[in-house]
Image 1 (tube, chains in turn red, orange):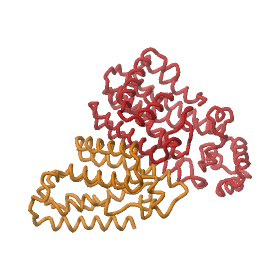
Image 2 (cartoon, chains in turn cyan, brown):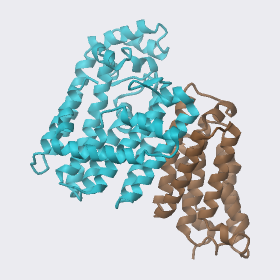
Image 3 (cartoon, rainbow over the protein chains, first blue to last red):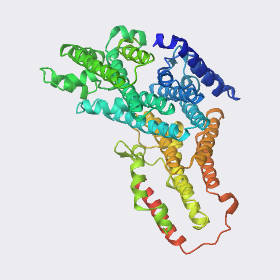
Image 4 (tube, one colour):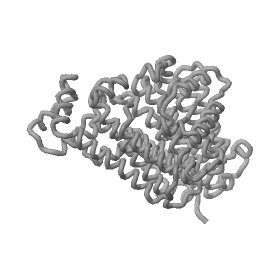
Length: 326
Length: 198
């Protein structure tokens, strides 16, 4: 990803995007100006705009609309982070105090909403307003459904791999897939090209989430993220490695199910026990295999496209998802 | 020619509304019992019933968009009144805050779609601008929970009747025969919403 962002053509596009974002976030109101710019300047991977811009680059699309749309994807992501911090009761994000910790939940929620509305208004600056707005509406609905499904699934041992995919498609994959698809549609890609980029984004989105699941169980990774090992499970979230183990029969299964259903009565001790079970019965290996399958499917989706130097960055991007440490 | 009830409150309208009010198999009113007021949710529709005739509600697409968008926007913005929700709702799941924030985002998607499905892009732009202003006030002005609620309900109501064209034509049109049908089906909507909420 770092390599992609440092490529000369991308640097220029990313700079244009950053410039656009700074302009959008210039408000007369001091509070909005300060807090929203603080989030913007605090960094972030810029994964979604980068992918959209890269798809545009594949088609040699130099139109300003692609910059506007890439910026919108980042703004939507920023608004969702503000709301996530309220949900997670987070005090710090990327080294700065969160809006909710400074001003309370109510103001943070409304500021996130305000940012969302400002984002929607940007779509009236591009030609394909209807396309962009319908994508954003679709994402708002589906992402919320995914999160609802996730909360409803907490500590539920009857869920299976299908339920898991339903959640992670909506939580993560659709946004990345739609970003890639928009890049192709805004560049007048053919239906086959649009589908190829959508599939690429969809599979790296799933891979991204599975990698997150794996990192949640990896001590070195969670140390970097500043979270405890098994944080997802602590909240009641049953991730892929555990679900894959629960699909099989093993002597400790009844005990594991009981612990989960009773919401981990012994806290850290239960988390360590379940982590041991996941390792013992191959949950990590199996999840890694599935992660690899999605990386392969993402790469396969690109095969139908015209060979083009830009495609190498997509292949590298897929590998980055697997190798990333944070 | 379609009658008013067929235009606005057909069986499909109810079916579609039920679908859209449900999130993951459960109505929004079941997530937050006794929180939303049916009077506010249907206020624009009732106002339209009392103050217009079919002639006035001539642009079918705009009317359909505004009726739906008003309901979904109320649900979206009221779900994000976290402080009020904490005070007023008599039932909380352990995850009520997450549900509330997600419901707000979900219904934002729904009101955008309400305009898009009827090809009302200009009206959507006006609507979004109005909600952006509203959010700016909510985020930056000191208000208590009741003042926030009042600001939301009044602003959305005013924006909706303005889009419906009431400002110029209010009270001027004659009530025609078809209004009776319109009224009965609209009352049905209010009853329907009440049933869902209770």
